[in-house]
Length: 563
Image 1 (cartoon, rainbow, N blue to C red):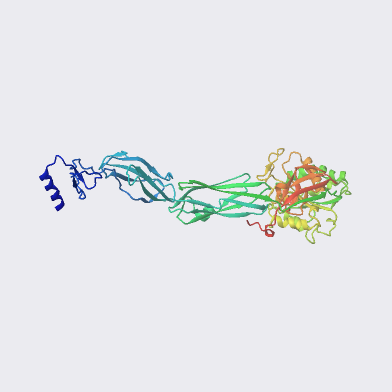
Image 2: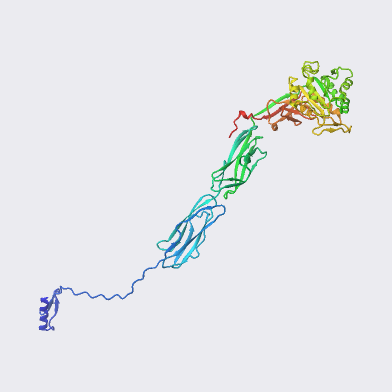
């Protein structure tokens, strides 16, 4: 500082015209120059004052949503719908623009209505709604996403939850294959109808449809469960039995159809399939025997109304006996009545003088007998030990065919069953085919009236017809217009075998009969005797080959048919 003052004094004393001032840092100086030390810095200039206004705070939109979760709880799926309103508000300072509003899963049970306005000014709000319409018993989840220009929250997601309440039908098994069931046997399967929902299942109808013929069927459904409609609470069930009883070897199918209040499956079904098979196929071969001898027992009603019928028999006897004469059959004939087991006269044969006259004298047995005709009973008595036609007697020969012909205009009043008499008559011969009975009686079921004798009437020959059917014999109407032709046919039927017993139990629909290699249809199956019986005027001739093929019904006790 003293140095500076010194220099300044020099300036003041000497003037300034001939002198230069230099700083100590100058490289050149001359005599008389003033040198100033500049090591001390000059002061910084003062900054100019800032006169610009301050920047304003920024403004933004800010979204606010009324729900963080939309929970519908439990809702009945049988037509109930619930709606929830959601509010979107702009709590910011700038316009809020909602650019997208969507359901993220879109399962169909939830529906979304759009916002009333997608541009919200500050403090403005708008609403949208979410509706829940469940379709069945299930938990339904989804979410709503809102996209906007909110800078710090561009997307907002709201979870959605709801539970449907509904009945749900389940059928077990919905498909069942019975496999192979032997024909003659049956099988069954339990089908369970369950409610796996959480509301009562109401079954309004249950139907069963099958292929034809109906070899599948539902059984016991009303016996087990009562009449429809059925109310099945949650977690419970009802059972239906489906049975299979095959009639043939074709594939059978069927299905149960169940109508209920299940909103998803108002019509449910369960299918079944099955096949049948025979246990065995058989062929029985026969040869028509030629009868060489026959013992013929006439059992003639001798009650008050029989006069006209006894006459008709004797008038046409020649047509009957002529068949035996032509064929050379060695025959014997005897006559008893419906109230007497003793012979009406001597045994008749081809050696009897004036055979027709002798037969007439025995056959016109009178009309003073009992009105309670018991032809079966007296035929049995006649063939019991000690009877005129007993085995070992002169009449009933061991090798001869035994033929009984009942002639009556009334029913039989005997006390035993038809089968008991059949058993007895068949026991008289070694083979069943060597004993036969025929019925010349009134028509089944109401009797008949003669066309030639208007006053003559015959009641239904109950008992006689049934026994003859079981014996493989024939029925002849007492009211026939042509007795000769009828008796001639009866004679032929007596000589030839009409009934052929099978070796096993057949399924009737499978029976095929061939005579000398050609199929014939004039036959019927006798299930009591297990035989094929030829019908009407057709009887295989003597010496012909008869082949009967059939399928055998299963003995179900020997087979496990369960599935």
